Image 1 (tube, rainbow, N blue to C red):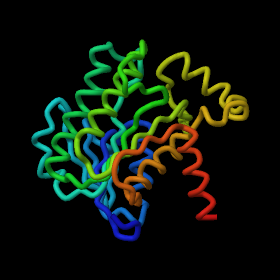
Image 2: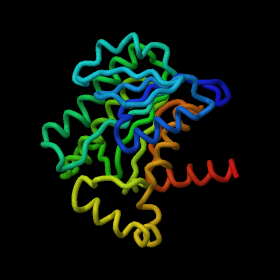
Image 3: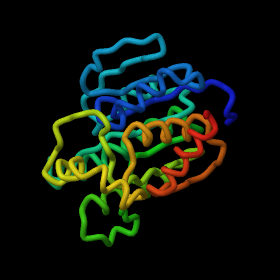
Image 4: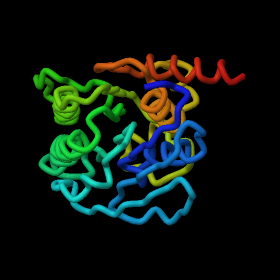
Length: 232
């Protein structure tokens, strides 16, 4: 993969917070020639570079094989908040949907560079008592074992929404309220949603490293700082 050539990118989770920013950034990114957004509900936008594909059942992605053919990069932001769904549903979304999508994508575009939205504390060993950590770790393991040319795992800590929204639970409402102070005291425990999205797209589209790499929150912030400095 060369950083200068244009890439075809497939995006999953474009109706979510991080995925929404990833979509907007990819559409205005000159390095991206087409964005194929796999969505369960319509985005309500149009763009010359956007191909919207409605797909409601991520438990079976077999019908997407042709759509996913010839892709160069993938950004996978599909997920759910702990407590917003049952434990069984959380595992289904976090693990099963990831594995199924990766299976079909690899069959159609094995050389794709794959950016995966995981989370801080993800535990690939499976020993964590926290379900989210175990499931994200399981998803990471499955992607790394899938055989893609490159896999980039992003483990953000608290993701600041940037734009006002209805927060999913009390913890998120509290973190948003104290964000200015929290950011000053614990800068490596926060990341802006738009910055995270940009990093995920840039690495998948421009990255030249093959194999698997894991980026913790501190690493993501450093990537964003470097990107801002290079464009200043």
